[in-house]
Amino acid sequence: MIEFKPRATSYLPDGEAVLIPLMAIEPVPRFTTHPKDWHGFDRERLVRLLKGFVADDSIEPVPLFEMPLFEFAHSPYRYRVLNGLHRFYGSIAAGFSHLPAVI
Image (tube, rainbow, N blue to C red; front, side, top):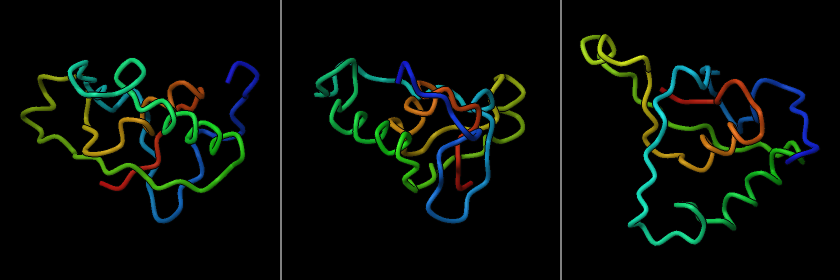
């Protein structure tokens, strides 16, 4: 990904999605107790995803949870990832500023 320069603000979603700034999404905790092979990730899955970004493959948007206003008031983040750790961190690694999401 060193030579990769994003041509868009996010990867290409494969369906209806809204673009959410990554800065508005709470970072997903990675638990070292989960049996992953590389820093809490499934390395093959992450590499396959990053290759898809480079090839402009359409990839499923990430389901997000919009935090209730009272919870949001105590947090700098407005959204929480429900499922999509690899797409979230892969987007950061690729240099995207937004994440395609389904709220």
